[in-house]
Image 1: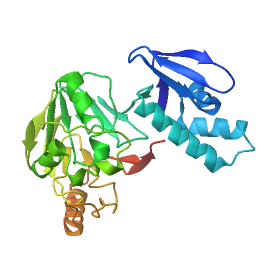
Image 2: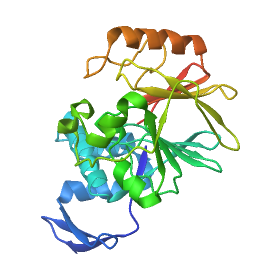
Image 3: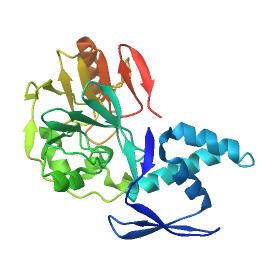
Length: 283
């Protein structure tokens, strides 16, 4: 993925030891060190994270490559947490955009007459009418409350994950979250076979338990597109069942059901997407 510093961020002070950034949108000051500033300058909308790694590894040959990579990952995470950078989405299909994140899950934006977000791992700065949450884990609802406040949008999830999102039960694993998560009211609960239509898409809800007992996937049969959350990552890569409410049997059953559907496009919650049996790793 590519990043760029938000237009509202200004350099307030600069010297050899520290750089002070001022966000005119939030009126907050942020201090970064010299290496952090090098990373910021490379977050210019043109470089991927891999590009930034290669540039800084070439520049700082005396530093271990793994240390540089870890510094870049951690620093971009901090920029995301402080809302100082914008993630530039990638169009992966007609009217479908992918937002990658160092903090949370993949977030997908459907730019049709209804503006739909699949999961909320990124603070997307676009109009949103509806957010479909594939499951209740923290990385998929990281910015759910903020996005609902910004857009007044409808929140949709599976029945067995509704209470967890609204009450932040232990299933959500908030102790692992990189930021504070606020409970968010769910407006609509969906079940197997429910349909959500836009001008160009007909999305069917599939109950795909195993990763959590309330996990759902979103499928357009005519376009052969599946948003699988963490239920399936293509091939034999099923969702992990080791978490609270996870089930090995349900995960295997879900894997078999989704493999029979055999979608052309698989858009999961992490790592990479699959189009026509080709894997595209997101970096």
